[in-house]
Image 1 (cartoon, helix red, strand yellow):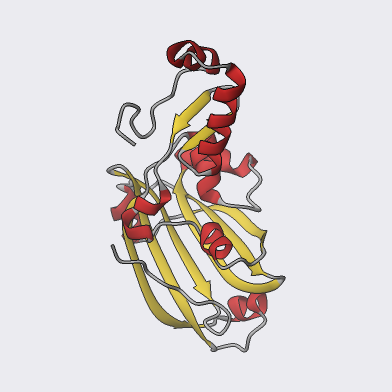
Image 2 (cartoon, rainbow, N blue to C red):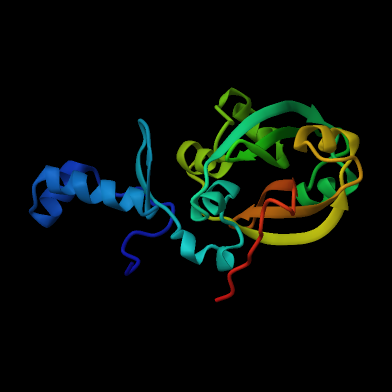
Length: 215
């Protein structure tokens, strides 16, 4: 809280903290566990424990993951990977990621369920720097993977919300009629000042309420 350890910094080991503050290792272990549960710390297997961003301060909460938003509603979220592939970027994506004409993007398409009801078709694009995501279990929070496996703790950028209409594929996945009005949310997300990903979420507005917290 007072900035002694900055966001993204690796904190000392349990033994070092025990010696530094003259407390038992079991007390240190319990304190770290509490701070991990409060999302102030992130444990990376084999690498150590790192300072996270407090999610209450993430750009007025607009970049909380879909997973965290659903948890705040006290609902059960599940995810199914639909497709993962490499695609040619659009002109807008080239500009955002600063790509050359012969570069590719990793495209991840997932179907998200709330209480077993299909709610959202989510498509995310990353540069090939993140091709190792293909080896991860993508049936959960992408932000949790980015934090835990890539030590990315800062998310900022822009969010747009508009109305769209269900394509045949979206209608099939979401179990709605073709052409049904849906909510389209697009995020362009940075880690610090570096482009991180673009995501497009197509949601059933009859089953999901989207709110923006203003500070």
